[in-house]
Image (cartoon, rainbow, N blue to C red; front, side, top):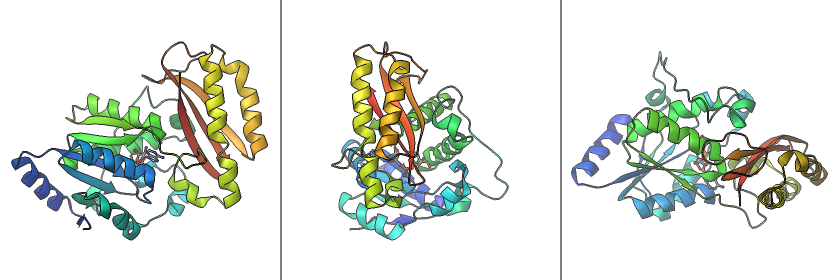
Length: 281
Ligand code: PAJ
């Protein structure tokens, strides 16, 4: 059976009250919709860990630094609800925009440190928008656990830091990246690629894996990255925005994998910006 779609905060709070009174635990999976198997893996993890699961769908204007990107973002509420039906979630929260940004909204949440490099540097204001909306979604749902994908590893760390710093009583849980059979990380943005673009894009993961294996052997990123970028351009990427080796704990940039680390990439294909990351070692 389809879960009820809730658009008003007052109604969501009513559910929260009932569930909490019954002693039930609540999990939340924040999304911007256009759901795919990556999102659904988070829903599965939430269902396994919590009595009640809320999936939120809100295309957050504050985190788009490019108006065209916001305008092109797929909106597929009907299909999303159908995809969630087999999972037995308890509520789909699709807030009316004024529930998130009421008239006169003037507050922002900004996380420094983990948001400084990579996506934070390439997309100014992006993580402020993410931290602000996620703080609101945490407070509005009152969930005790939240599920985020490692696909957006930097976002996961930004959100975890934000919740800790603001004393929001929620555990932020990271879940592994779900990939197509080709290795391409699932993403709503893949919908914008042609069949040929998808095939070319699938080269990103093996290049990252190879580089990660070489880094694991002690090589430095400086020595390897020109070749890796050349491989991606030869595969059909138009631009490699960054290849970056960072601590998995605090994202400080590393030259060699001498601490637990991940390798991150952002690259453009057919005018679409894709990101991915793999663990090193
Ligand atoms: P969205 O891009 O819809 O992603 C929602 C969640 O799904 C994020 O936690 C993301 O990391 C996860 N996800 C996306 N693709 C995945 C994949 N292939 N495997 C595993 N998890 C995947 O991220 C956002 O929305 C927004 O920034 C949001 C947190 C909702 C705030 O607006």
